[in-house]
Amino acid sequence: MKSALIVDDHPVIRAALRLVLQGLGFKQIHEASDGNEVVPLIRQYQPKLLILDLNLPVFDGLEVMNRIRANNLDCRILVFTSHDPLYYQDRCLRAGAQAFVAKTNQPKQLQNAIEAVMSGHSYFASLASSIGALKPSHANEKHMIDQLSDRELNIFVQLALGKPNKKIAADMHLSHKTVSTYKTRLMLKLAVTSAVHLRDFAKRNHLI
Image (cartoon, rainbow, N blue to C red; front, side, top):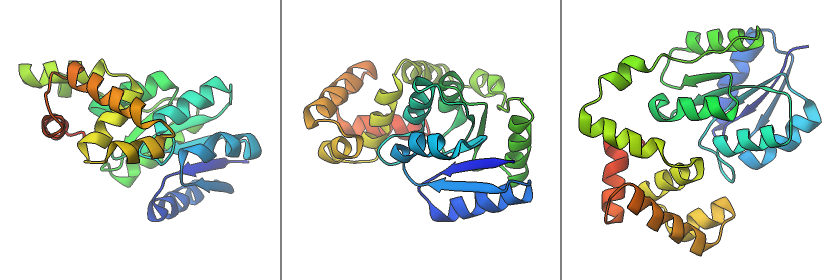
């Protein structure tokens, strides 16, 4: 029997995905709204397909995939996110995803991705032309972003969105000191000197 777990913190998105899955013959569809719920729910329901957003409370999607792999759980993963594939698709592939679909795509793309994954295939966009078209300065910044760890990238985006260190620490179950250390490390790695420049860097590269 076709079964799926939808993980997204927006109820409207979850409802829309449920309709898509039902139209494709899925009978058992479960839902979660934050990353902390995923591993227990996979163990409980053993879904064949996981549709996963990246921007989630507690554990982001990349961390969720790392935990799925660490627990040796068998589940096909389709990432469905608003994040730019230029910076996130390869990370998701390395983390164990079988497909990556941007929320800006047409619904048919999502349906095609679901059918491909359920048939044992992968579904990823070709990014070669996008990367080749980058200006040298932009390509250099992309390289800097690519060198960040998944957690560094997550904290970078949250800082760029203006979240206080204490809020980031609470959301990620980290200490305030740890987040401060990450912030200092990010500024060094990205060669910026202030939080304003961090935000500008993120906006310039379509991370926020």
